[in-house]
View 1 (cartoon, helix red, strand yellow):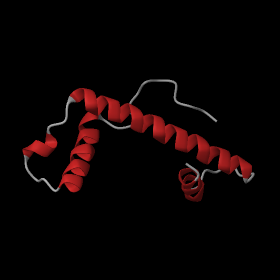
View 2 (tube, one colour):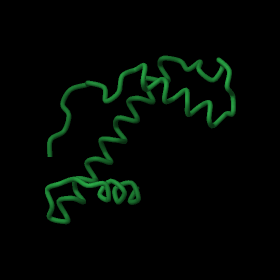
View 3 (cartoon, helix red, strand yellow):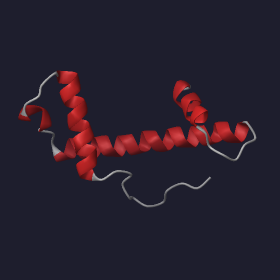
Length: 85
């Protein structure tokens, strides 16, 4: 298994912010500009936590793949990894 050694982001800051703002708008029911006012520190913390979560799920899914004696990572492996959390 190869893990990412660099601090490269999985998603650009702008794209991640759009996703976060969209989720905030859906959860809060607000459609105005107040929903899009997210502090840069909060976005950075969310992006770091999201990257850690995705990396952990991928690692667990890879373990499920190896347990099944396969080399190809498949979608059911991700489902299992998420369900086990």
